[in-house]
Image (cartoon, rainbow, N blue to C red; front, side):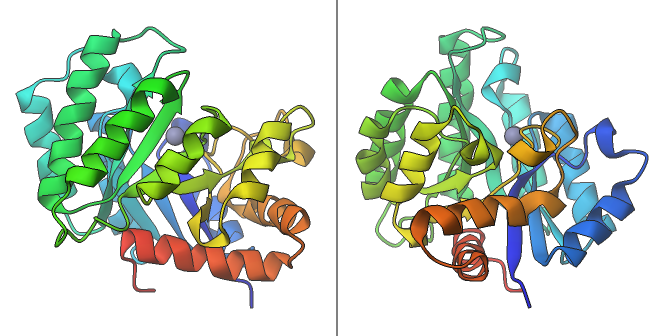
Length: 267
Ligand SMILES: [Zn+2]
């Protein structure tokens, strides 16, 4: 029996409106035991919470405001994120972070949203899901300092969160590992020109990797040009297995266990 999980989905997107239950069924048939659906703004965070009610015990939610959508983040936004994060089924704050590749929000606006949501995660003792793009030089030190200043008794001191789709350069990885972060490994690890993603998989401890699709985006190589979905997770696990000289089954078992610990999921 396979034991897979997908720690980064956007199943609320309208790409799935026509066949969402079938996508979930295929995920279960592929051996997935749960997925985490990630909000990028208030509306998708709300929708993520609704999905936890529509698919209880299979879909869990992360709620938060993505850096690209942080230009009008204010105290009212923060209060609404907090309300959503307090719902059953909410297991993380995210996705949050810094994105200097796009300029939908200024770096200053992005930092206001990031720091406020880091403080919220500490207060609610929820791990964080981090979006990083062209920003690791600033983001890694911010996250490292945030984790270092978490009280020792904090539930997230030793499971602060996950670097999703990390592409910030291998030189920041030791700092992020030292701070206790996990790394989400997705479809790009199967891409021809993604040698650095494979190098990352070779250097990370097995207990610090998670499986993620980022669906509907980033399908594995064999599905490129199509919509991604959680049922493709075994292709990512197979690639990791290949790189680490273990079986896909072992990868599924270990990385799903990692995800359960990080997000405090019992099933
Ligand atoms: Zn995402």
